[in-house]
Length: 389
Image (cartoon, rainbow, N blue to C red; front, side, top):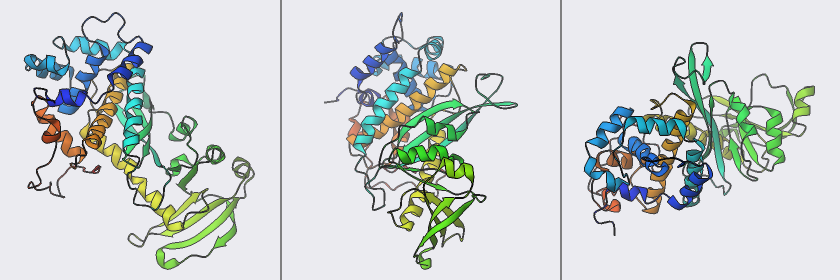
């Protein structure tokens, strides 16, 4: 069926181009374009992600050396760095944001049945942000510190996958807690976050929307115990309490009771205090939910290590956001390919294979399927292999 097609061309067939075309038309992305359409722009940006290109010249030289293979990639003309730079600077970054959202919806449907390792049918999200440092003299539109610029990537990660369900890109000065005002709240879902998101006015709105949250308490929190449930300290659960706030403003911001669980980790000996508005789950499940939040930290480390979002091809806000959203789209696209073809290799392994064989004319399911006689990478390898989905 795919005889004569390169691996890159086969990967691109998983993109819903008809729907992407409607997005491009909505933003007039191809208006006045002669040489590089939006579809070609994404193909080039995805090629740069998959093959780890780090500059416009790098992309131009690499594709120029494979000029006889450009047509099979879906490119009608040779790629010049000035053309790609202009496209990244001038075409609305929301084209790629909406395209990423389209792919994310598809990926989440595919991974909906993944096991969380918890006896829980609810959707579980982990919320966090990562900072990408920039040079202030080049990226003056993204102020952060006095002598530094940065962008923040606020991410809501669906832990069944894990697939980013929501991403917001801001300058470095935006505080993490403000993203709670932008989140689409899903009733019945769990939102797991660290203490940086401890704003009781916003958490109460989340509670009123029918969602649950799990976070950690601050040491200076002024609250009184209303009721204590029986606990088994041998499990590490020190106490399981219903609490109410004492302070005037705190009790006004969150007028209902909260649940406070004090847990001592048997392995590290560290004591953690969790806050949640869920009163039904066992305390150990609440502790396990908070522990699962670490996956979003690993997600950030993983994409910084394996995707090209630390070195940018342009300095404008539009170019930076275009590159980040194209990177996210590429990541989700490979996750879709993995699930659709039921590949057992990790996402890291798939990206490694594609990085050196995008022009190979092999059936994709064969090229990306690990040889069962091959040994897995050693566990001590200096690479993050988080995603084995």
